[in-house]
Length: 87
Image (spheres, rainbow, N blue to C red):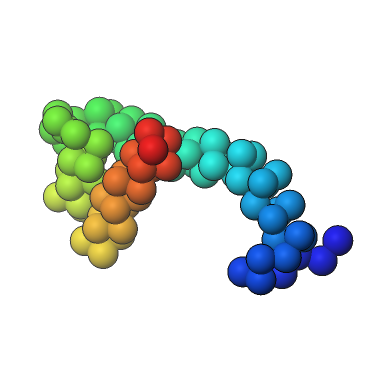
């Protein structure tokens, strides 16, 4: 089956309807794994006590674990995960 993105074809519709329910949970799980790893590092290294998930990446940045550019990207993934998982 050939899938052409954005054409409105039957193949594109099948792809959206069958893959989306599978991909969204997996993407959410991958993003949650980032939070879990960040939380472990922050806790193990005693970098502070984050009040929010985004603060995990602030603490990693200030602790020298990640560069500011990566911290910004990771903070944005927290918001994306919230929209993805909670609608």
